[in-house]
Structure formats: C-alpha cells, structure tokens
Amino acid sequence: MSLYLCLFDGDREIDGVEAGSYAQFNSFRESAGNCAKGGRPSLPTLLGHSDCDGEWTPGECGDLLGELGRIEPGRVARFVDPDGAPLLGALRRLAEIAVERQLPILFQ
Image 1 (spheres, rainbow, N blue to C red):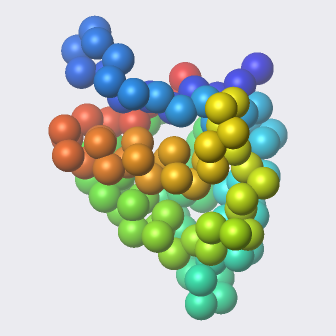
Image 2: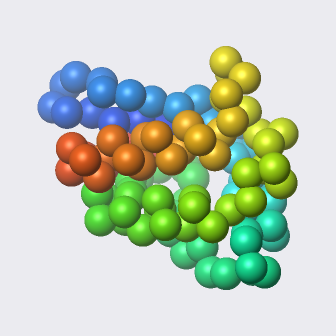
C-alpha cells in the first residue's frame, strides 16, 4: 500500500505526489531529519504528522516549505516518485501550490 499526498479544490484534484510505501515515506522522513543543513534542526511539521491519514493545513504547508528548504537534497536523492523525480522537490512543489491556493495537503 502506498501513500498519496494530494490537493483538492472541492471535488477537483489539483495535484498529487505518490510518496511510495508508508515505510519508504517514513525512511525519507528519518533521512531528512538526520541530514538537515546545519546539523539536526527541528522539522516538526514533516516529522510530527502521522502518515496514515489527515492533512497538512495551508498554514502547516508554509511551515513545511521552510523545513524542506533546510534538507540537504543530495542526502535524500535516493527517494523518488514513480516518475523518478526527487521526492523532496515534489513535496516542495505540492506545498508551494497548497500555500498559494490556501488548500490543505491530504494524506490518502
């Protein structure tokens, strides 16, 4: 079973990211926490949310953007979406759209 992070505006899907299996997403989060720039700064939005359901609110997506910017891309490069794009960049893009449109990122 895989985790899908997505944005909906009403009934219309705006964008989404296949984040891999729940175990893979957890590994991504652990790696991100271990290789953040400048040591191990707190990444509460990324690390503190259950991956099984719920959402990141638009406000949390703004916090998430800041946290994603503190992660060293090369250290999490092995985590990719099904199209081979880096998961870090895909999450950043999704969070940017969420903030811009004031929509939550849904965990499915």
